[in-house]
Amino acid sequence: MKIDVAFNVNGEEYQLSVEPHRTLLEVLRNELDLTGTKEGCSEGECGACTVLVDGIPVNSCLFLAATANGKQITTIEGLVKNGELHPLQQAFIDQGAVQCGYCTPGMLLTAKALLDIDPAPSDVEIKRAIAGNVCRCTGYVKIIEAIKVAGQQIANGGKA
Image (spheres, one colour):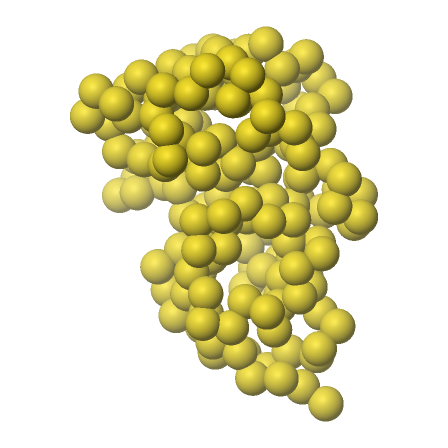
């Protein structure tokens, strides 16, 4: 038995029939070919699969696709607008906050949700926001700095 769902992903409307047990991660990667969302632990512990659902970061490995019915979903592919990187993406590059890159899509989307609420968060607020996103390469210092730099750019007229 399949369930009909309709949702918006990165500005495009989709209508699909999905099995009730399929996760949003599986549908994004396997049905919509949006492979920027990474599968890490499959237990909601690492944050590699983080996407935004109605602006809220969720672990797509635990979020059933049927639950996304009627929702707005943003994946890493949705951050680029008109061929231009989002200020967060550029800040991550400029600040050296990307190493292996596996955690980066989830980290960026979590940071975007934070900066959408407050473009000038404190270090503590940034650390709290990204606590569910594990990075094994950078040690977080450059990630935190990149989020602060992007927030400053956004506050000064950049786009979130």
